[in-house]
Amino acid sequence: MANTLECSIDNLPMMEKHPHHKLTIVHMSDSHISHQFLKSIPDGDIFIHSGDISHKSEWYDWQQKIEKELEKNPNLNREELYESTPSISSFNEWIGELPHPIKIVIAGNHEMGFNGLTRSFIRKNILPNAIYLQDQTLIINYKGQELLRLYGTPWTTSSNMGFSISRHRIKDKWEKIPMETDVLITHLPPFGIMDLASGKDPAFFCDYCKKEHKYRKHWGNVELRNKAIELNSKGCLQAHLYGHVHEFHGTTVEPITKDSSRPLLYSNAASVGSHTDKNILKPNVIEILPRKLQLI
Ligand SMILES: [Zn+2]
Ligand SMILES: [Zn+2]
Image (cartoon, rainbow, N blue to C red; front, top):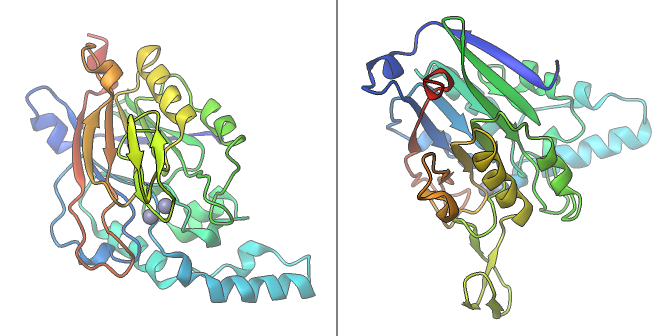
């Protein structure tokens, strides 16, 4: 099924050495051209990048060129006209060199050149050195047993960028996330959790934070947060990984689930302030219980 990819692996040295056989996920996001400045990368079983590898400014010339060519000949295929930016090509090489046994990537709103391409084209031709997920589940099988299910989706409500969708339609994308998901990867944050972005917005009283915000706005999505809580309480969700809001970098636990036997962990791994930033933050490191051990 196109909405499910599988990968099989027999060797996960970190998980095998871990006293509780937990999987170590190394989570990075929003590197915006600067991935190569990251000098030390933590060890892990799975490396995940949750979007914004490139920067919108890299796509403008190519976009103008492609629009002109499509105007002249509307039958031209966007995939034949596609050209990666230097940052996308160099990221693909860079991730190929990482030692992590499994590497997963989703797109962000800055990957504007991915619009109109099929996800299989992106996977095979643009980011072949990673497992590219776009509204898809990846099942990881370990020595013949199902270990983990991860779901990745790139959509945001940023207007006219990569994978942009309106505020009232975005929840349709969350409805597709299967209940069996153990790890959710989105580019957009859930509302209220490490999602307060700086901007030019006038002061307003925030009902959620119970205080006034000036030049700050929640970019996170309410339905996404509700979905993550539902996937945790009724399903298997252990962690929700995202980026997009550059003002935060860290991990926290969903307050509603903090006393439950399986708290929901959030990770915002945005690693630069802006795309000219060479001071890139280290990825977040998260530990997850594999699926077969949850059943014992
Ligand atoms: Zn973004
Ligand atoms: Zn970003």
